[in-house]
Length: 528
Image 1 (cartoon, helix red, strand yellow):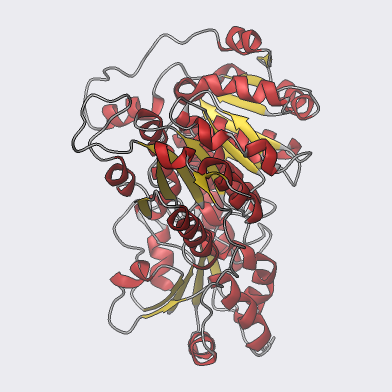
Image 2: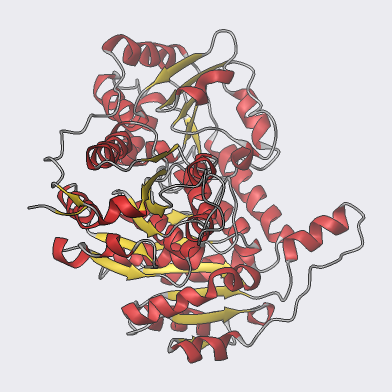
């Protein structure tokens, strides 16, 4: 049946597997809201478009399906660009659909007018396109979902003119079959296997792109006798009890010395970016093999290295089938005691650098359900926890790496909780980051989410203050007067508690998972 294009878009999304849309309606995009309920899609009302974008991001990370947000012309789309930039940086499948003005060259002074909305989106998205004809809109939607399935996940933006959204349109065609991710050839797989069989001291580095191959990793490590690291995004891929596992401590300077000991480094599904290493080079001197969906990641290899475009997780599965069993008489070249000593040393360094973080991490980890999904913000507690908190399963801790925006954790956790109803979700953030997206607490209350919101309150921009001190800059503009967070939470209708001890904190977290509303839990140095 013919319907306005705005309504047909919702039906098209539903046919392509979309169950939830995050957004805020406005005068320019109301036609996009005409068909949401009719299509059987749930809409989650955010308090700010940035929150809607973060919710879509959190939903995508939690479910493995694209997150979708509806945005309004101009400022609404711009408000979401921070979230889209974060999704781009962290390889997250988010589709932003926005209204746009019909004409901007000859008419000035229109409501929500900006010079080039499409071009603005292109600065933070994989692509940003405008389409007014129904066939073009549907084609771009299918392009987005096809690329989400087959290429490196990154956000896309589709802008639709207001008049086109209200104009009659035929339904979208049936969704096409989606392409698969590229797989390595037989010869490529055996090139990796041959290199591993020849290496005496191989080292694996597993990134977020290898998460879906995690169940095969222990077998792979046993077969190869390799040591391993994980990036922050790869935490949980390697079980913590693996004897040759160095943890998620690539940012420790000493990890460069470890890399230098390896005669082969195999990096799977990771950029090895600045926010993974916090230095320019990994530190290896011998050959490296890198496997990634993104060819651009492979552009900085050295002579003799091997870069392969493909699905790292699929390679892990294939290798465990094809690699011959390791000869048990072959002595290991990595020393498990030295690995354990390095991990203990690095943990002690975190304890000295960030007082209380190790103790707090251990207390929280002890009561956190194994299936809990955690969303953290740019905060000192998270920086330390990312190194010392071993995850029981992969893909269950999400942090705004790369773009590094404040305000991510609360709305992203809401999106994650929506995507995993009945399963535990937790947000961890600092006092300053909370104030970026605090109004989204209203959304969590409306949805009745049993969401623990752990707020590390040191009354300052603590990390920036310490950086100023280390740079011999007199600390300036790093302390602000905080509101009464507990009172604010109660004003929204949420629970609020400030435990006086680590045991009290554990009880508060367990109670929050059983509550009928979100619970803000304020954590201070008084806990220690």
